[in-house]
Every structure is written in C-alpha cells, then in structure tokens.
Image (cartoon, rainbow, N blue to C red):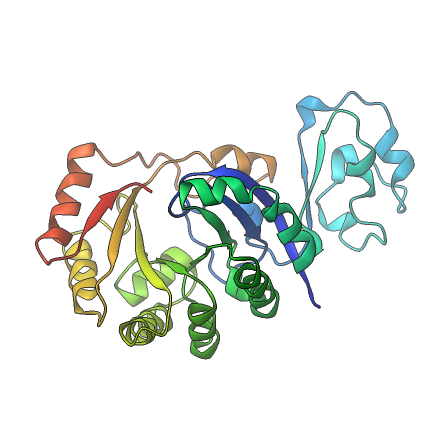
Length: 305
C-alpha cells in the first residue's frame, strides 16, 4: 500500500457534495490559482506555518530543532527545508505558534477516520470527498482510498481541476460516485495567466469523462465554476462556459461559486501577499445573471455548494 500526503481531514462538511461529508485534503496541486482558498495545499511537500502572535518564547522549539535554529523566527524558510526531523519544532510548541501542514498517511489510516462517521453518511446521503490540492496528483493513493470506499459501501466524490492524464481521470471516474469538476477560465491564455497552466487538457478531459458517463460507465459529474470578478466574468466568459457545459454528452448540474477572500489570512501565515488584493465578492444580482446564462442553455444551476 502506498502513502499519501494529506494536510487536513474536515468532518461534517456540507459544501463538498450531497449530504454530510468528510473532506480529505490531499497536498500538492499543479495549478496555482490566484484565488486559491487552500494555498497550503499547493506545494507537494510538508510545510511549516508560523503564528508569531501566539509565541510565548518558551524555547521548546529551539531545543527540539536538529539544526540548532530558532524556529520561532525561521520555521518554514529555506533555512529549515533540509531538516532531518522536519516538524519536530511544531510538535513541541505548547502555544501552537508553529503548525506542520502535511503528513504522510496510508489509505487505511485515512479511511479509518472517514468510517467513524458512517451513520451520518447513511442518514444524510453523504459520504467522503477527496479534495485538495489536487487529488489526482496522487493517483495511486486516491485509487486505494476509493477502493476502500467501494468495499465499505461509502459514497465517494472527487473534487478535481481535471489536470491529469486522461487514463487516470477516467479510472477515477469509474471508481467513484461523483466528480466535482472545476471549470475556471475558458480562454486558454487567460487560464494560464490565472492558474499557471493552459486549459486544453482540462477541457478535453471533461469531454472524455462526459462521454464515459454517457455510457453509464462513470460517476456523475457536477460542474463547479468559481466566479472571480475581473478574471472569468468578462463579456463572453460565462457564455462560453455555459455553451461548453451544454455541449457535453451527458447532462450535468452546474454550481456557481461566488468569490470570497476567506483565505487572505492563510497567505499572511505563509509570509505572502494575497494575490487578488482588493477584489470584492460578486453582487447577488451578478450571480443570478450568471446562473441565467446556464439555465437558458438547459444546464441546471445552483449558486454556492
């Protein structure tokens, strides 16, 4: 069995698919979206975050540091990247001023946590959602988790950007119950500017997944489109997304997700500037107008979720 890198397991989620769910966050993502809500999930390796305001200067982290550094001031920097016991400083910090983000877990460990809440899934029609980061960036580990879901009768969903080998995506589609597929920007060059990568693979993969679903050989698909003012709400953006959704070979539901800056504090913890600065959430009437474009093309749409 392989081990995967996980940075969070969040219980009682109601925004990651139907019913009450447990969301498992895989660490590592090939995209670098400017609006990313989980920037701590992008790098494919463990990281340390610092909360200087919590530090009580007890010296515990300095004593635990194999490199004889002062983690209260340098944890997470290049100075400690090669530490032979990375995260030891965070483990002994009594004030939680240091936080280790990302740990290796087996599929059995992850699913052991998920299975504790089986009664809630059964009563609500929920299950587990694998998200991130990008779950398909750890394909073997993801498939092992999905296999346990099938064996245990737990409904599974995978939240993905679609940036992966087509063969892997289709295999995941066959192994899961629901794919939450993110559609970000339709224009390839502007997609590259906003996420770091072009979108041809993402769009072709979605078409392939829809073809497989149309044959009854794949999971259901929810299309999720974050609405980011100034990035993907320009004239023609939403029309193009709605037309693409309507052209797929299997009917699907679309969810429009209004932008918010709740991750701003996470960038501060990482010592980084928030990429979108003063961008504001779209007004409710803007979200309604966007939804109408999908509905006019026969695509059922919800706002949020």
